Amino acid sequence: MRNITVAIPDDVHLRARVWAAQRDTSLSAVVRYLLETLPGISRSASAFPVSKPNPAPPAPNAASSTDVPSAPSQTPV
Image 1 (tube, rainbow, N blue to C red):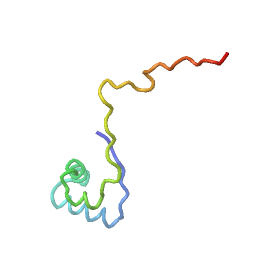
Image 2: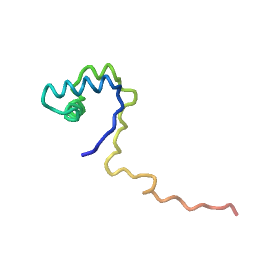
Image 3: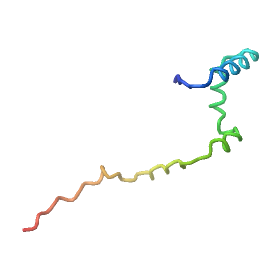
């Protein structure tokens, strides 16, 4: 499991901690849940629209430029 650092205003932190405490949980558990369920949050799609689509994965067994031997250089005679 990874730890992250998030900078938020003091008042937001206080309200979030109180909200979590009222539900007998931690702020970390709330943030973890929100991140795990992020694809299901419809508001996030409009608040954070996709600006860059995911790059297509490489085709299976596709040769990369490092796999292909280069032609020997020829000097004109």
